[in-house]
Image (cartoon, chains in turn purple, yellow):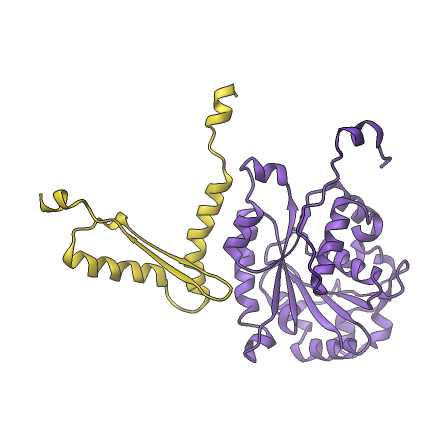
Length: 271
Length: 87
């Protein structure tokens, strides 16, 4: 039976879609059967970040409304056969998503996959509440920046009150994924530190993704960063996060692309 | 920027942290459906303590820290030194 994971944040632009692709990629690279679902109706982008934008025929709303079968809408990744994408509709209204419809689709997918990763839209409207509605696990993506932390706090409140689990008196397992982190700036007191964010939000830390050029490089070519450059700092950080997600105890570090002096002198790598 | 300015410049991250902590105390009350609990507590504590000791409004701090398993309520009331209070 699949685990349903929502990648959420409240604020836009903090790295939900990048993280959905990277976590989904890393899980699939480890042999798990994974489907990533875009809940951002009208502003879909997971297809683009995953490099499947020209293969979209049917979408989540077509399936919810019974106009297409789930198999017709699922797009299998060209590089990883155990990774699939269910895109959002680009033209329809978000009100076309119904709670029952989403529950039906998720139940159907639970039979075939190990992980169902729901990429939430920004905000706290229908798309976002439906993306988190049936989640077992939530990954709260946060930048070390005041507006992002505030919005994450709000989202944590919603995960504790508006989800199916919360309404049954159970708890959604919540994890913090700190993205775009710059350890040097944090050390200089110019950026909130990991511990500051953890103290304020008080949910366990899943990983720290360093600010890196590799993230843009990967989305430019339509590939999860874990697949495009597994050895890069963000690549390694996402792999570590996935191991923690699966319950392994992995020492918390901020992977770095920076090389030591010898590495700088001799280890130049072509981009 | 001069050499000294580099050392005198106050770092901004602690300001961010402080602002967030204060803001979120208030917002968490709103989300959980209660009115501003911290402000309410602050007023009532001020009234009770004020009946017996002279305290200034700004000298009463009420902070709520939310934790995973438990939350703490921190109340700090600064009371003037006895000599001053008698004067």
